[in-house]
Amino acid sequence: MFEAIEKKDIRRLKKLGQHFHAKNKETAALLCLDHAFSVSDNLEKSIEMSDIETAISSSQIFLTYAELMYECFAYPPPLNSKSVSRLFCVKEATSQQRLLLTPGTFLHKHMRLSPVGEVSISYEEFLDLFNKSLSSRLYKSINAQLNLFLQCKVFDPCPSLATSQPCQKRDCLQKHVLDLSWFNARIRFQLLQVSIVQFLHLRLKLTVIKNDPALARIER
Image (cartoon, rainbow, N blue to C red; front, side, top):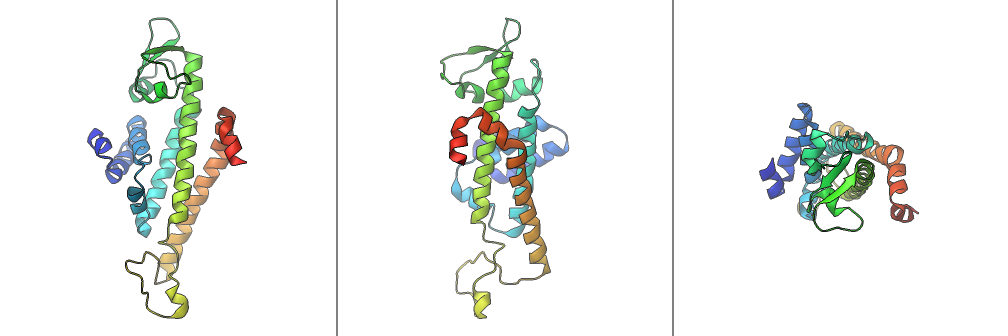
């Protein structure tokens, strides 16, 4: 798992994420899928949409990732949660009801004042930071994935079909045979897009805009 994370091996991370999710190892699954869908290399992301089966599979896995991430922050973890402690490198402080954030970790980087060194915060402060940082991250990931859908051409009919002429494009990704298999795959892909959009608007959007007024201005 950590080798795949270091190498930014998207395909392997997705397979590992599915494997861990099937085994109910949600912490490991979330870690793999979060790294799989946060790689910034545009070329790597374009490969996800280069053929029909990969586009559908990637969309299904992304929906699983969104569900896992949402459940992570929607249901507040207990103070002594071992999974949260492992995933976010959070430690219990000696003072009661307080937690320690380690420098260089995800939550430490998302503190407003960007403090240097280990930071002690109350459980209530931790929950607020936890909710805001994770919901904002998921919100941005979903929007990035929806933009990727707009660039997907593998379900589109090739314009050459309208002229009954052979396609002159080299390595054309668009479809040249519009059969039942193509139709069913296109409907399936569109339904997955609808599910992700519904997830964004019905479950996540209000939480994120409440936490981050700057995103509210972007939406308008």
